[in-house]
Length: 442
Image (tube, rainbow, N blue to C red; front, side, top):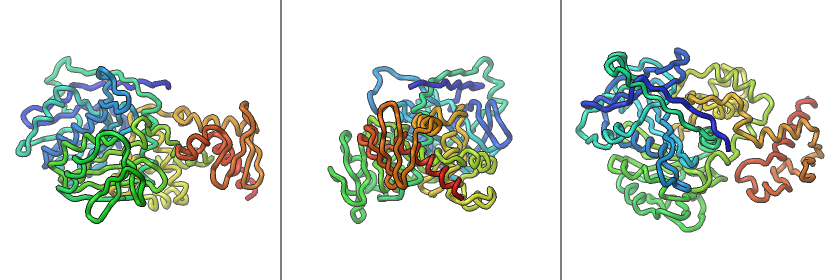
């Protein structure tokens, strides 16, 4: 697994002094264009204690490695912040690629001025983490996302630079999470103290299944109808410090996969964790994006749809379809393509995509999806032969038989995963050729 390198450059370190939280920003994109240190927001956070605790939770996930923990701290990946106008979204991913965290500070928790909309990284350093942990319920909190000129000019020589390796696996996880989340539905909900009792009563290790039972959530050692799989319950640890503020807990899961998402409703904000199917398994291996990326028109459609995005808090597919002159299914495929480029996320509570621009260089989509690249090579080599609803694919390891009807294949990879981690390269290749044949026949 190779890595790219992300360079963070901040005009000054983030700090919390006398109730004023100044978050230093690195390079990013805004409505006004590319920015070296964008300034998005300045104002009061009306719920200081839960906001500070939740932001610390996002930073904790960025530090964590839940599978094969390191004996000493690894590279620190700074959280990403997006200003969507009426809200601020802070996102991070665990170093192991299996846990995604997001804090949404909504309009009910913010009272201030928005200077621009866009996405950047924010500096969360050790002294700031210590300061955030000390904020109490009665403490005032003024938040600045992006430092004003007065702050910067009083900190001569305080430029902060960090160079951090970003593995392909970690980068691909952002794409996989938004696609997997878009297929999730709410599976359960608990209010107040019931949520506290449930989370504190979970085992720390192993795998359990969770399902709604009346007003409670039932934990089972085996899968039951309507249940959500929870592997490695200790990966929910950053929820625990937030329980004293929790209004409710919502659980989300897809119909045909084992990932799950856990959302705490806090005063004026939401804190969400998405977990991969297994503690050792990162989202980057799910393959959920491959079918949408394999369509010939997806890249061109993404160019059109991408130009219409303006850092909206909710992307309305119907409105985009009308403005782009495309059917809704092609807009959804285009959003998947944009997700691979880090340009959209997915909000489970509102069942809608949102626009953001991850500050990472991912121009070559195939680099982050080697299965798709290999499938296209098979197509270019003429290795695929269609026969109705099936196909044969010639490879150096032998001929593979593919069923287009159910997406099965005779390769070892498919037998190992049975479609649970997306289609294999042979199925992808066959689908690409089948689509081309349909287009030619029209």
